[in-house]
Length: 317
Length: 228
Image 1: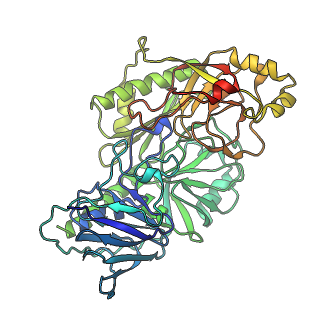
Image 2: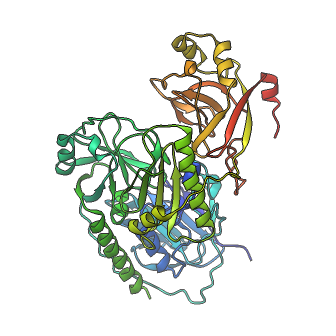
Image 3: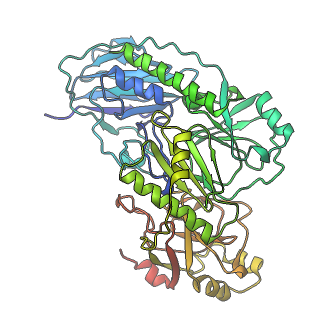
């Protein structure tokens, strides 16, 4: 029997395959990649009864228009997304996030846009039929690693679906109720003392604007110029997701999943692990504030974040 | 040895080996990197997700659901690192064509360094370099140290697209652009050799930290007929 697949009738702005990401390659210059919003990634898999590390489709802003061929599947979308299901008989249903649906041959999913956020996730029961590279399905478009030759999807591409092992497609739902504020919690960076007292005061008191320069590599912010009183360059050294670097122009850059693995700008802070999903979802023109927390506080906040994720996962059991 | 251990956020440990850049400090970093890589491969340590060695720092990333800063810090402090005499470091020879069409910044270098092309190339080819680290883009080696007479600052305006295979120099360092990418180094030639091979999953990078690299000059004909 032929395998089920999605035919891409509209590619969307940046449609890729993502998962938890690939580890142990920073030393070679290869980023972790993986879903920008890890919690929503996990929840989308849970809604279709997948292993939590299955590959999903990640889309940004405007998503793809997909037509199912050769099969019947169960799918779910997570995030804050406007989408419709166009049935074969041209009946149109408004889609609801955090809910699983059955899709029949020649039905279409039209992912119109994300709302007050950037990314969303589409999971199908059984996962996508793709090959892992270095232990991960994630597409890294900067190094052309992963499925689809490491490139984002284009019109007429096909995404094959693994044969589902569910006999009955079950409808699942999560009551996802999450209203984040725009306060980003950080731990002081290793070069925090490169900045003047005036600059560090401003860093915590004033607003920073998310500019249009946002992608899977990072976020450029605009705010008060942060004056460096030691050196605007350091010898190149490793970076991790969440690091806030400040180049000579004084405008911070936050590293996201596809970031360059080494960098030579001073690090004023690092976004705590529990706030990485949130920061990655903030759309251009959003204003944010930074708040300092201690390492111990960050670990407690992360514990609460994990407990919250588990609470949502348990709703689905 | 490690001068200071601190946290880089809540999911990484920052090991500082000092502020200078030299081979002996970097070998120290690489020894720790190799030792920890072995522990990870043999599954003797839990939760470490990445190791990032650089000139004089080692960053250890970890999964906060499995471990934490204190546990990894204790592990590092308890390690006894032996200089690995039988290390796997290699000596690698890399061909470079320096015809003017590949030596994109040779004119700038002649003006800045006040010596001629022949002298620049002689000083460049007449030395064995040490690989301090790889990174930025996949497999890009950071090599050093250049002869003092051919050290030059970065381009004032970086190129948006550096051709793949470009061989560059800046300050005391030499590198190779393994992919087309933005970049600000002074380009003196181009290599036809594959420096990063993502089909070779076990050893994708030709040059790895601790390796010794020397370059040799090839003609344009040899460059165009290069076959591997």
